Image 1 (tube, rainbow, N blue to C red):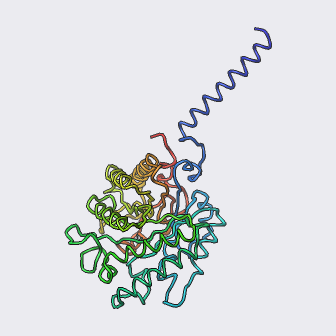
Image 2 (cartoon, rainbow, N blue to C red):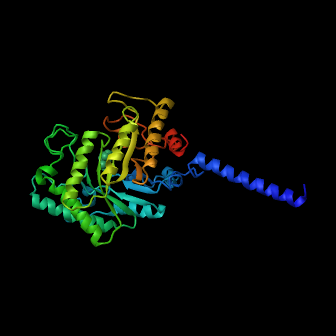
Length: 373
Ligand code: GLA
């Protein structure tokens, strides 16, 4: 063979081999070779973590943060924290999150403006106030809070959290005191659904008048349960029927390895899409316990594998619907700190997250990085 032809042949072969290798790699890696979660999911949705103020600057977490591009304050943006008494705001801790998010160059979900839970309600909001003052307080709180944090970092707010009853036999879709829900609410007793309309109406007015690029969400748990989901959808229709905007649904996604079902999770997402809602998975964790009596000394590989299958399924379904699922957040960073160590059983170890107690990626992490199966 003549020399110029030989050179040409070698060059052509090399190019062809490189192209096919790249194609193979792309197929194996879901389009990117990256070992960084946020890069791997760059074409799909934001990946986030929740954290509390005390842990924000924990040295061991700093390396893990590189995997994420969204953050949620576990508590510090709730009403009782931001306005501990009626005439005084307290932004110091919450502002530290905004500062950190800027340093990390990531976004934040604002969580949560109106939530009935005692841990989130300031003392001056109580069952003895009038409907009028309750609604006035809500308007003031929603308006000043959204304006204070702005949209440089915050891209969504949970405007109302957990307003739907858990009781399938309740006369109302809403959570009320004495309705048998896990945690009663006096909000509905005072104001009926007006407190929900008022919160969303004010949130809409504030973002629109101030040109803020912030999506407005309703956030709740057990959204895989058909009956509870129907109630949430009914509530969102009621809000929208008032001409008020609700952009999305936050599915908290506190799951466990025993009862999670892919078909139910998928159906929930499909139902919300049919309502024209954007979807965020807002508080994902996967408990290894079946009931209150379950105890484990350590996380066995069988448990970790079962958990990895659940994580894999969740992220896979979310990728499938990534046109509508735009953010997926785990409720914590690593297994050294999780609210599930004390809920629903206090002082019982759980391992519900993607990183281990010693800050290593777990099998769940590997599973969601692998798009091949
Ligand atoms: C609910 C709330 C969260 C948090 C968890 C428990 O899901 O939405 O803010 O308080 O409970 O950690």
